[in-house]
Amino acid sequence: MEKFKPVLASSTWFSALPPYLQKAMFDKMRLKHLKAGQQLHAKGEDGVGFYGVCEGRLRVVTVGVDGREMLFALLGPGTWFGEISMFDDLPRTHDNFCETNCTVAIIQKNAFKALLEQFPELYPHFTRLLCTRVRSAFQFIDSSAGLSLKHQLVKRLLMLTTSYGQHLPKHNAITLTLSQESLAQMINSSRQTVNQLLGELQQEGLVKRHYGKITIPEPDTLFSRYQFI
Image: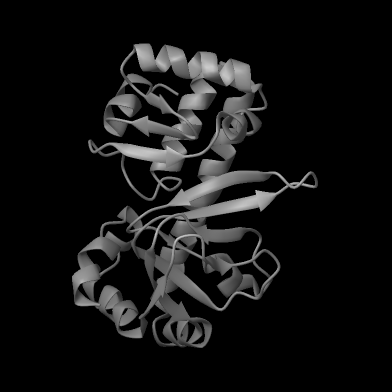
């Protein structure tokens, strides 16, 4: 567990917790190892815990009536998730699969409840985490009305690479495993249009296209170039 503490503390949310609350959460965590392709939880399942990604990457997806998978989020090291079901006691809203071999830290639901009872000062911190997700969702909805398709595409790529605001864009390259068709669904466009827009971004040196994958060489550069969005 010790070697993963710096990773778990890299989130802007977790790093803002007072040290004694960080320690209290670390003390309740247990590690879970999963293989690539393994499902962490399914849509409709009861929420059993609050998670932090130690290593690897997970895909949060939903499957349409036509059977096609739509990517909702990519969760990388240092990302925290799963708190909603801890508070409302309702089932999970999406499927969650491991894109690579993963290690996740889990605070089981009963331990999570005990933490809140012992440290009620955690509530505003979890409120802030929930607000980050809501704010990101509303910002993306707003962007659909006021931004060009290219800017919507960039915003979606940035949201995927920063786990919806839990991390600042980094200088290291990130490769996203997703199809152009999936990106097109996210911005309500066509695959042909997305391919054209990605081509423009590639000419600008901001992305690289591969079959079924997109590499962002320098996410922080993409962010600074389009920070006005």
